Length: 408
Image (cartoon, rainbow, N blue to C red; front, side, top):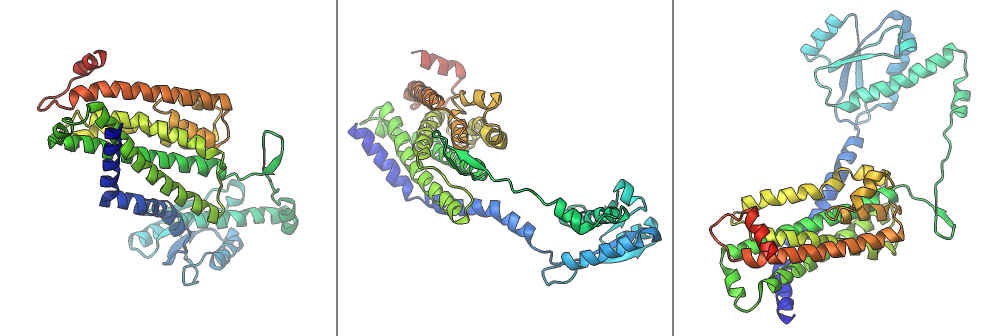
């Protein structure tokens, strides 16, 4: 046991000082947060430039068009406070097309006389990439058309506004004693997604380090020196536990940052009682995948080959990430529940379901036992392969050979 502890200590101390660990631990969360948060901030910014829009319409709806122009000038502005849109009245689509090709306008609207009946308007531009332009135009024109329909029916717009006022929908969560507390809808989505992201990042960053560590020591023949004083099983256990401790440090830091941001932004909160259950599936999830990565490090001498093969493992674990929105919003569906009992997916699925409070105690117990048995099986299986493959050099390992080693 002392030999395993020495390997754990060496792996942890050696890796914790590396630039890669420091960057991924302290810079990556802020970088990921910036990637997720910055686009929404930029989308909410007012535009810098004005847009020239052509209008094609008949004189029958001139009053509606004038109100449309005035409304756009009042509510749609640039960062400097000027009207966002400069409108140009055009006679025909041929004239509008010529103006677009000559860069005199950015786009044009064709507004028919039947707009109050059909509600159909056409917008043309050489590029539709700027969604905010035609969304702003559509939203403003839509509101004015609705108001005009009310006026034509001699309905008082102010009364309609009062009658169509939205209801206040308050949500409450009930505990096992039937006591109600004010609910937070975002918690049901953000908390499980946060834990899911942290588990995925921790498992695969630590897993990649483990794979690379085994592969480097094997190709440099350092492993032969280690085997003179420790057994292959001790090496594998030491590396898994050492890099697992490293991953745990990262996980705690990521979790602290994520929950702190959510607390100060008042987005969501996590219950203390959930933390131990999350940790169970963090640890078992890591051990399950770490045993796979440790063995994969003995199969390859080229990092490129190793990355390609580890990518296949990532594809399996990324399934909960891809379907996360479905699993979070449908925690009780048959697909979600069945996915919970597939060991490679179980840690991710249980974290999702724990975050949505949709899992019973017996399910927690059963999946915990399932993961403990799965981890024991994978560590046992990986140990057999690791012992044999660790000293094989210069040959491709085949599936048939792996099966033979497992049977021994």
